[in-house]
Length: 143
Image (tube, rainbow, N blue to C red; front, top):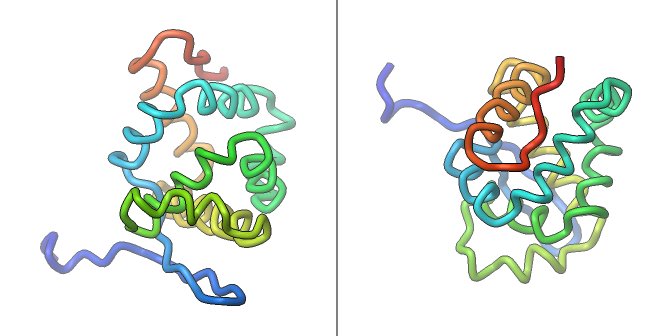
């Protein structure tokens, strides 16, 4: 198998008025998110530091997605645009999607990202380590 044969896993979120095909987050996506939303990502990593919150986030992706939508709405819109492979000019459209659609999009993105990475804990541990090396004030990796 070569790179040209590789099919990026995706899934469709359907809602009244349309549908979006989404994929998981890539390293390039995280680079964009870190440049624009490092304080917000740092706050999310603080949720991950707390073992009870981490388990909740991992096992209950709908609740975690809802928390993301409530606490970081602009970052959520950015994630949707990135994972839908849409143009950045559509950021305001993604920000105006109904909250239930945003939550389902983020839940699907989380699911696809974790699935590709081999599990939520492995993914989050790797990401926290990567972000820690990229900027000051980023939370320490949990023990």
